[in-house]
Length: 205
Ligand code: B12
Image 1 (cartoon, rainbow, N blue to C red):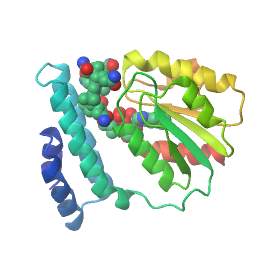
Image 2 (image 1 turned 135 degrees about the vertical axis):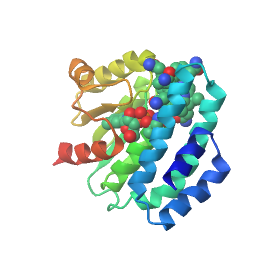
Image 3 (image 1 turned 90 degrees about the vertical axis):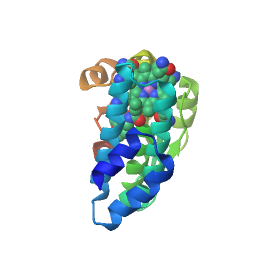
């Protein structure tokens, strides 16, 4: 069952994946396991792209399938009381169009009890700073998936810190690590959506 979901992500079968995810849920697969197998599928897609076996269009259709699958999964992953812990501003930094990971982080943070303000992808520094200045923002979460957009992430963190407001800054995405987090002076880095939600709760505790 999980193998089928994994395969449908890799092959970018957006129409078939909805049924396959629903079937997996009905047969008792845990939603977290289904998500893990879909993410593993995206990793394989990334590897194939890196090796020149597939190109951007194939990556894009795999991403569409992944998104369709996540839609079916969402009600099963999200659970928490809405908005009680304050606002989280989230977005993918300037120059970067990847949003699957960012959307998962947003979803898990929302289900952990925050109100999420999602700025989308390719978010200019000024837009992050303006949104973060709103009343009640506790955390600003920035995503970057490309080594080439790590400088944009650094610039975003610097501007958010320079604004001198009372929020925490979280960063993440495939090329990011704790060392980079320390270097740019963000408050927290985590590797995945579930740990990001846990960390968000810790940051406001
Ligand atoms: C799908 C995909 C795309 C799709 C994106 C569609 C979309 N709507 O997102 C498209 C086709 C648009 C795309 C384009 C490109 N891509 Co691309 N893409 C991928 C791919 C295959 C999967 C990404 C993904 O969704 N992963 C699944 C999610 C769940 O994982 P995630 O994003 O890492 O997120 C998790 C964590 O990182 C973390 N996290 C993420 N954000 C945050 C934020 C915070 C605050 C926290 C705490 C945690 C956190 O939690 C998430 C959930 O667990 C990756 C390969 C890979 N394995 O990552 C390549 C990859 C990222 N892409 C790559 C490249 C090169 C490109 C292009 C430059 C290709 C080109 N020549 O045009 C363009 C750039 C476009 C742009 N300007 O952004 C490279 C990057 C190489 C590098 N070192 O920089 C990769 C690694 C592929 C590879 N192996 O070469 N891509």
